Length: 355
Image (tube, rainbow, N blue to C red; front, side, top):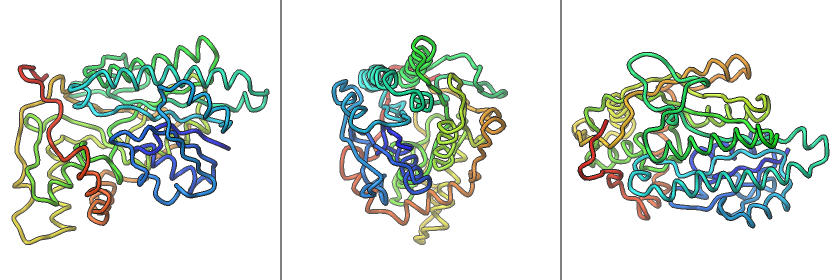
């Protein structure tokens, strides 16, 4: 099998590519624009593998995407390429509309043309898996869970752009018959995570003894999923999912942000002791971001019962693996921090009221 993975040099995409090549023995074509969050180091161990090809391509470039399909003849597409950070979407929403909406449109058009020209057996086998987020569903109260039937209610430019792309994929499946599937995942964490997100940013600030900013009082709740478990879920959807269906994915690990930060600090104290005061003393509370959803929690019963997927990591085991990876790989994150992002706050809109 040959799989085209868009955004394959990113955090989740890299985990998927590594798993496909090293774990499944598949042929993989990685397509990535290599923006600030794309890093070929994410493909460590598979980049030079003869079963892997890298294409430096923007998914918004219709001619280049058509060439990728024509030259590589994939059996499936795993579409992960996206602008993905809520705070950046507040600062600059245009890039999110361009990549997440128009880029998905360009990819769908190219996939549709390519798929329609395949012969019967390959045409029947082809799959287009679109990878999205639970943020499209908006915010939960204290009780209940998102599932595949939850109405969309996005709060940020990022989640609105992903909601639009989800709808495009479903429309291309219903209108044109393109064999599409959609997944919506909870918050991911793990190795190779770009350090603008909560877990890696907290790890690095704790290691460097810099202030650790927490929005509001840290009461916002997220459902955490180890990235390798998510990668395995996406392969299960590609291999065994039903065309036209949606699958939500989570580790069922609900944690308040403040509890996640404190757990990271405790692990850094344990795994990288430096004789100083506990890293939790670095925590500072900052003004909340605009449109900050209160709680996400995801019921992944469908993918577990229908496709037989189960996460391998608990939150505690996955977080320990993650902290240890950052401690063991300073070269990776020091290069990242020497470039476009150095830990500054993003998405603070003067005069906007957080919710």
